[in-house]
Image (cartoon, rainbow, N blue to C red; front, side):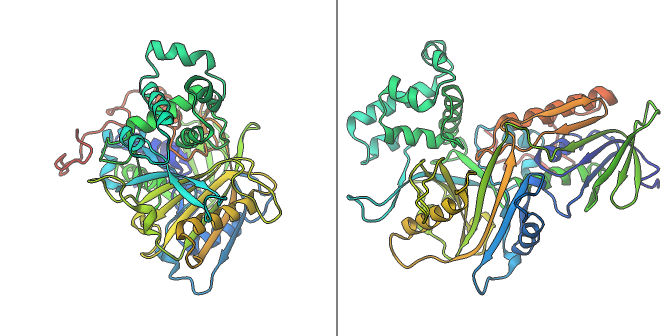
Length: 499
């Protein structure tokens, strides 16, 4: 058997983030020599999921507020008597996946979905602060179906008609008559369009903007219509009462591991805890790269596909809190329709200006909280996880702390204070759009991650482009792009996605 140094590798992949892992999945039936390395000792890179012990170590590594790379300013606070640190799987960057997402289509066509357990994402709520009419803060569920709108007691009859008119419009927004209405306003703020064209008041506008999960709340008409149409058309695809799913045991981290596992079954060699220290070009026209690894080994490769730790100048920085709550909060996870599954995750939106910290600073951007029950496998029974995020500002850390307190106060309906058992706080930098750098013929770089709260299908474009570039270099292989037959001994019986 050849040693790693003696092997002529068709491709070396560096990093086990989502895009590299899907790329590895795409090559898993290619029959090519694949070496997949990662400088970290875990799978998932920017989409990783950690036990509490692993999260402690990760936070220590990324504690500096001036750190270069994707993560910085990480900090952990703990209550006394934290349970076993291995009973957790905290996601670094959780994203829900809509039922109409192309990612799910690719996981089905590649048969990788068999290794992933998906769970329903339930209601979307809007946080309302205490007021003269409400002594306690409240969480108002956003209606997202025709039945929801008509049964809502919070929306006046005339407003219901306007909202129904807009929802009908969205479901057919690509048709020529509807496109003539919105295209002249395509780059304008969606909220402005909702008010002028559909006479929706500020409350209903906030409902619609929440469904887009826009980080800055200033989404354009075109992007907003795409996002809302995806949400509405996804409703009921895999079951009654929900539009999105979440992979159990840590979200996209689980997808990363499944992609890498498929590549390993296909013959790829994996080396965690091993990074690349140097890349030199060779004169050899066949094997063009000499790659030095952090373990002192040197390998030869035709191509290198790697991730970028450089964020573009127009990128975005998000402040995040991951909080383990010492209560299950079952009221948040109630099934809202007869026959619908009990959701494992819900979303709470805090509109701009709805949260203030102790110094009087008010939230400048929307805040989103994804609340996960223990059914996600991310925490023990009797607890839940709250993932909060907002665009970073000078006061965003304190603002998120205030949002967490407000959410727990609203969820507990004024009963005894809920304990935050463990809290991980950090900043993450990312790009606004996915990219692939192919300027160097033999070295291809996936761009910085996009920090959406719902998986964006355009994240798959660099993976497809990487596949096409690889095929162009090595010639035709006996496999389609992420379309595979079952391996021997596996059938399509009881396929939950069939039909």
